[in-house]
Length: 636
Image (cartoon, rainbow, N blue to C red; front, side):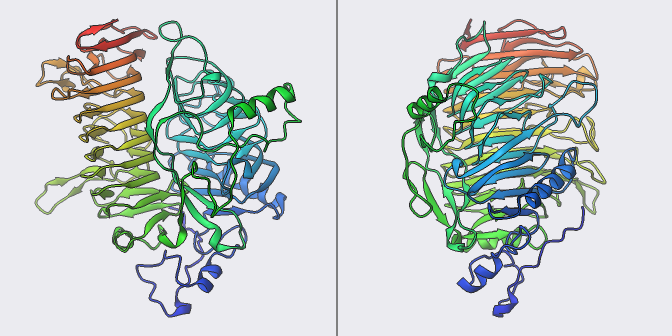
């Protein structure tokens, strides 16, 4: 890891013991203000990998800083550097922000339109010069709560989010129609069109846009305003439209509207919404339309029609936004000084946790109870350094957001027995747990021995909501092979009434997703089975009676489950292996799927069926098979 130059946290001035409490923000007003003072775009509290930009700052210096971060991060796929670029309310229309790996762009206003950025882009030119503009490895980056004043290219794949933005033009989800495998957009307003282009799949949830073009394998809309939805559906078009999000809460959001006032710092906590359609925020006349290429009055009229008026400022947040958690309730964690022990202690003392950017090497789990929030900045990473679980929860009303979980190597005991991580995240008994923008990784990073984990995430809590999860056993990078980055499953769901939006699970040795709980709902699923199966006999399920492991396994006791927009793909790179079906589920009323596709990308064949014994085989490169509906053995 590069040596970081974060400024030390100053606690000694008050004679307060600093060991174990380096991240506590609120000691008294004077010290809080000193530690929150901005110098060279940084504060002592947040450290040198969080940049705070003010409208009054020298914009040339801001641009040079943004460009330097991008130069470091454009191709830094498996590096340990992490950055958050935070903008105070203001006009930055002369700036261009290019977003690379492990970079979060965050507006600090109460609305996206409080922070106006000229141009923001994520291109796909770093991976090769073959002209393909391949975005299939553009992972781990985030844009939230800003207005972008121009057409925007956001050529990304999994483990990315664009939330609560306004784009005063069109949004292009590809780079010149190069390969792309995303993706997630929520709570956003696009005044022009959205062009998904070559994206294999996408989830658009609770958005507003003028129109949508582009479709490939599996494009899913949930709770979007109906005026912009494209026409057509399966089998002619790969569009799945769900009118409402049955239950959802948006990701917590850091707000700091005035750099001179520490008491304007807080975290917006959106409430859960039921049967949600459209945005959590909106304001009709906060955009200058004069530079748009289409008719100004037409666009202004459109904006008024889709956007109810709202008013308010920090401390006076409209009810539709949620409520603000005072920053005195938060502990600011640092990867240089904090451990699982110190973070757990802060949680037990009633604090929420804000993880500043970096890699937290943990040798035991962080433990969180009821009514706690854990929020990462700059894609902060929790790494299992002792064959341990990184985070365990036990209780109700817990929120976890913006974190990357990394597996580490197994450990060998004195008796020669191996110990490996059972799961990176365990959501224990309880209810009402919200998971937003959580990413999991086994392998790929530079390690002395292979990273291993039995599974990445187990969900035991009822009424858990997952919103944009990528669960990945690495197929490229360091220490990657069938016998190296060893796993069993990606995610195991035991809780009742669990909802998953944009669940993406890839390359695990056995079932990618095991769903044991009743009442589950799944909206947009993307999965690839493992590329590197060495021979067919090592990849047999059901005690060797069935070829391969389905991507989704809904357990036999389940009596109620529904999935919408499921895409499962095969690239049997290393051997000729068969997969009996890409999904297994019990044949009974109440267990159903609407729109599922299997795809043979390339390699050796192939999948014999789609669900159970239904659906056509895919055994040649480019072949697809779809089912429009399946329930109780009846399908079409």
